[in-house]
Structure formats: C-alpha cells, structure tokens
Length: 265
Image (tube, rainbow, N blue to C red; front, side):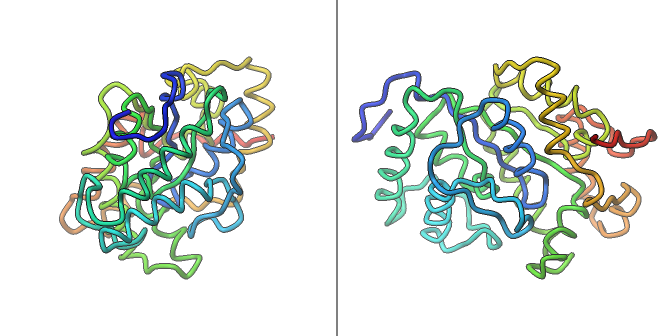
C-alpha cells in the first residue's frame, strides 16, 4: 500500500464496495450480502437520503466519503470535479481510510455500502487496487423518484444526479473486478441474480440459504416501476437512455421485461 502508515497483510486488500446511485437498491444488495457472509464491520450503519428506513451504509466509510467530497467543494448531491484525492485535507482522510481497512484484517470477505463511493472510487482504488465493486443500477426515473418522495430533490435534479453518478462510475471501474446488478433482477429472478453476484465476488452459499435470505430481504410492494418509454419522455438528449441501456447490458438485464415479478415469500 503506497504511502500508508499501516502495515497491512495482502489478504486485507480485497474488500467489496457496494455502490451506485442513491435509490438504486444498494442497501438491499448490502443486506443480502451481509446475510450471506459479507462482514460490514463494527461501525454503526446509517441510512441514505433515498432509503431512510434501510440503514446499511457504514458510518465510518460514509464519513470518509463525505470528507473527500467536501474537500473538493462538493457533496453527495453536488458531485465535484473528478480528482485523485491530493487536495488539502485529503491526507488525513487517507490515513483514516487506511485505519478502517486495517481493522478488517482476518475478517474476509468484508466490505461496505455507500452510494457516495461512486464519486470517490479512484481514492479507494488507490488504497486497495484489488477491490471488487458491486454497481447497483436502476431505471433513472425510479431512482430519482425515490429521492423526490423523500423531499430531497426534484425529479429533474435526481435524473441529472443519476447521470453524473453513473458516468463517473463507468469511468473509474477497475477492469475485470466489478459486477453490475440491476435492482429489478431481484424481483424477477432473485435466486439467479444473487448467485450471479456471489459468483463474481468469489462468495459461496447454498441454494437453500440464498432462498431463505432473499425471502427475508426482497420485497416488491414498496417499489414503483417506470417503463423505458416513460424514461424517454424525460430524456430530451437521449443521453440518459443511452447510459441506462449501457448499464443494463452490463447487468445482463432487459430494461423492459415482459414477464411478471416473482413475489418474495
């Protein structure tokens, strides 16, 4: 680890970062992975602006991410210009992050969930180049609507934020060390999608355990769905649709499925 004051064994260098735009299912995916063996650490878990009732983000990692964004003149809803994290104030955050990483030695598999990591991914990859990334994606209208329902942003603002988060993510993803997973796949093909993500992370679980966990975590009734056609009506330039289809392709997901969702029992 370059520039680190913490002497970390190599096995501590393989965390899992669950991220993606707010309102895209990150807390659900983090909870699934946690119940299937992913260690999220000892820090309190906090909720995000789009999911106030689902606290699955590590307060410690959120604190570092917020510090990075603010040091660059931004915040979670004001993505700053891309940077490698050399600005004033980043050094202390780097040391804090190194300490967090060191605290997970011997606790594999481990990781954290925070949508803000979409905007700070180069910082974390500089510390742990072997990190794996789980990118949570959802129809931009649905993610933006989740924020709007909480009174956090307007629909138009949320759509622009979705675009910024996903553009930044696609630019920074480590080749061969990420998996893109679509929110709706957990409603239509939950067993297969959970297995797909686990396989990409090198995690194992029996079919029986996966079925039990997904029945306790995945719920359909709380979600609102928008079609690709509805998204097009909000997308004057076509860039949102283009980017969304790109992420759907990476997630191996049809953005307009014709079948009905599988209800979690």
